[in-house]
Image (cartoon, rainbow, N blue to C red; front, side):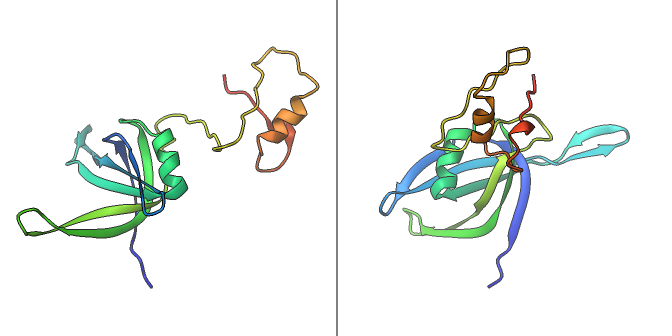
Length: 156
């Protein structure tokens, strides 16, 4: 089956609404505004803002609710889906939403800190502090990609 995928960047435009359906399956919904910018005659001009409703399920929904605030720059990847329902006046209403597969802060516009849910984060020493005996343990607990505890760096 072919599914159309969409990837876009924008700013979180509403608070993440977290709920549950069925037997407690987490679902989150929020809005993202994406405004194109173009350089015309040496000046930047904003285009018209496109607004997307983004939905996410399960662990992604929980993580979004704990991580995003209104105004945060984000990248969203997902599939376009149509939601259809009957309004109170009997008319059929259809709305297109992006069902997110992945959402993250847009790091071209700022910094972010990654925290795995359910794990205790080690205390990271500030520059100039003495290196203690438990430094290797703390670094290993951070799960660096290469598994090399010596890769811990400080960005002050």
